[in-house]
Image 1: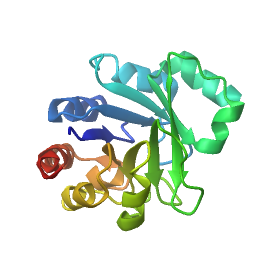
Image 2: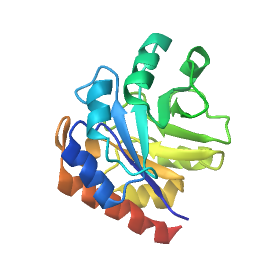
Image 3: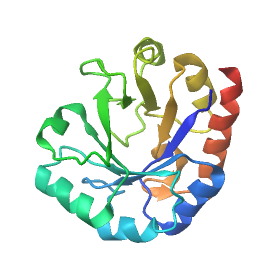
Image 4: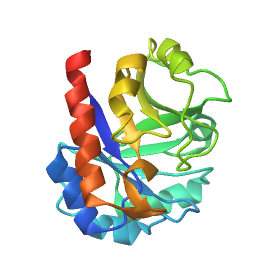
Amino acid sequence: MSIFVKICGLKEERHVNAAIDAGADALGFVFAKSRRKITPADASSISMNVPAHILRVAVMLHPTNEEWQKVLSGFSPDVLQADAQYFASLDVPHSVEKWPVFREDGEDPATDDTYIFEGKKSGHGETVDWSRAATIAKNGRMILAGGLFAGNVAEAIATVRPLGVDVSSGVESAPGQKDIQLIKKFVSAAKAAEKSL
C-alpha cells in the first residue's frame, strides 16, 4: 500500500517545488480566510510547472458558489476540498474531484470515495482521536489531517491506516511559513511508514 501525501497551505513557488521534489502526491492551496490564503491568480502562477500526476487542490471553507467559480476559473484545480455539507450548493464540473471534509465533532463519513478527516478547525494543528479515526478509516478512502508532523506521522499511519495524510502547520517553521527541510522530512517519514502497512 502506498501512502498518499498532501502538503497544504502553499504560497511560494519554492515550497511547491520542494513538495514535488520530496515526493508529495497533492498540493493544497487555501482560498479561505487564513494566514495561508492565496489568490487564484497567484496559485495558478506558482503551480504552472506541477507535473500532471500531482493533484492541485483548492481548499475552501464555507464557500459560496460565486467564490468557488472564481477559484475554478482563475486556478482550474484538479480537486475541490470543502466541508461536506457545502457541495450540494456548489456547481462542480466532472473534471474536478470532490474531497469532502468530515470533522471529528460532526457526522461520520458515509462514502466510498476520498475524504478528509480532521479536527474542528483546519490549519490549527489539532490532532484527532486516532483510535476513532481508525474505525472510520475502514470506510471509504480517508486522508487523515490534523496535528501531523514528521515525528508522529508514522505512528498515525500505523494506528489509523488511512489512504493518505495531509499536513500544513506541521511543515512550518513559524505560523504560515513553510520550511523546505520540514516538508522533506514529513514526506520521507510518511513514505517510509508504508512499510508498516
